Length: 60
Image 1 (cartoon, helix red, strand yellow):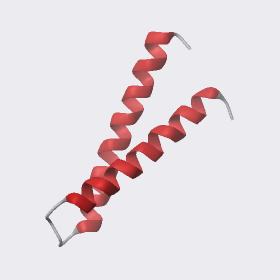
Image 2 (cartoon, rainbow, N blue to C red; image 1 turned 90 degrees about the vertical axis):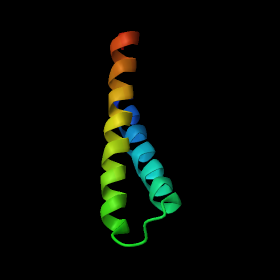
Image 3 (tube, one colour; image 1 turned 60 degrees about the vertical axis):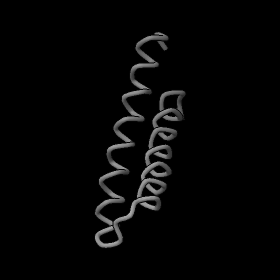
Image 4 (spheres, one colour; image 1 turned 45 degrees about the vertical axis):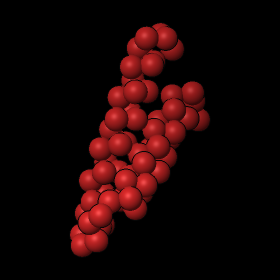
């Protein structure tokens, strides 16, 4: 597994953790699975964008 794969895995774990915390702290009690999947997807995309920007800036 290369250096890029570790950062992609870290972005996915970041998305899962942030999506879970966001769902857990929300007041909404119905449809929490949909909220979890939406927020996890959004945070995973944000994490992947951060990784892409870091690799572009650092030239790795």
